[in-house]
Length: 461
Image (cartoon, rainbow, N blue to C red; front, side):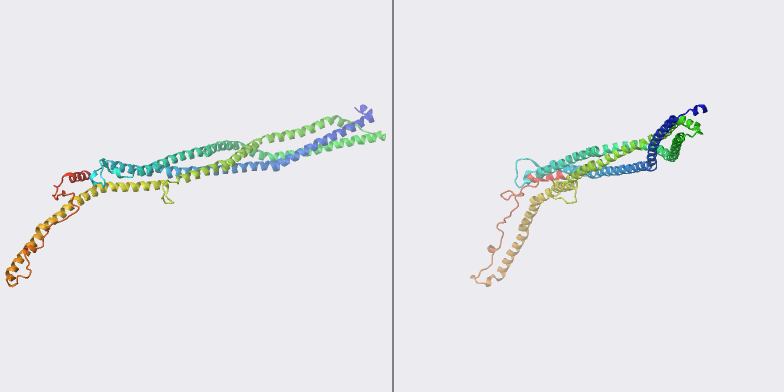
């Protein structure tokens, strides 16, 4: 080898210088790029990655909190539908309104079974009547029809409300919950990866620090080699005879391997970091899913919920409207209808009871019992009291004439029997039910009176 080195020309050394410079320049470029990569890695490992870990944890918390708020809103609306519509209105049809309707219908049906004789009417007719003929059926039917319309519309609106709530809220919320389960499962799988990544950060930073040191050493070695080549060329140019090129020649032989080792070191570092990055790319995927779901939440809260709440308010306002003209402002239509039905039921129940237990008796009393009592009093008075005082007066006058008459002149008026007051005629009114036109008293419990007494007995039984 020493014999070969003695024949190395200046041109060879000059070529070594050129090759050393090219290699050094290539190494500088590689190291510069590697240094930029290491800096980016440092930024990502110390800033971006911790921020990413913190961000995904924050997103998970925010996402879960927002879903809980949506659940609370959906639960409140669902409860409001149940309490204000189903319990507050629809269920009251069965508990309040329908019983009131049934009570009134029962009373009206009862009125149809109670006969009304023509002779008790102010204007008798040939038609057969019952108590229902004297009930405001047309008005009641209109009221019942309006109640039916209200019930039917309320049921339809309730169904519309529940369908809209399902389509606008429940379906979306069910999807939110399904996605929530999926996201939590992904996050649960991601948590160990994040923890492992956090523990690897320090190790990677230490490895990168070692790589930086190696890069400096490579550059120092290649720079030194280039400087040695330059120095050897200068010595050869000055005809220096005592020149040892053995080390330099060996370095020249190793130069390709050095650059290869440099590239290998840089590539291994990049591969290691790329492999590390791939371990948490699922974070970005999960973040995208969460961001998409948060957008869905926002659309749900700004579109679906306002639409349904507006519909709900409109339905509640309609359900508070009644066909009744006079109702208390705080009174619901159901309470108003029920109250009116109960008043009608009370009125017609009283009507039936009074007719059966009071009116017929009072009618018999006024048309028959009292007139007989009145007529008896007159008869008793005429035949008893009037007759007695007349007889007393006659006896008084006879006695007085016998005692004093002979002492009085004939020119004086003397009381006599002919001038005695007497009842010539008694004129009565209102006795047509117990007397014929000629004044003869009708027999008891005959004709209309018998019909009336039988009716009283029937209704009493």
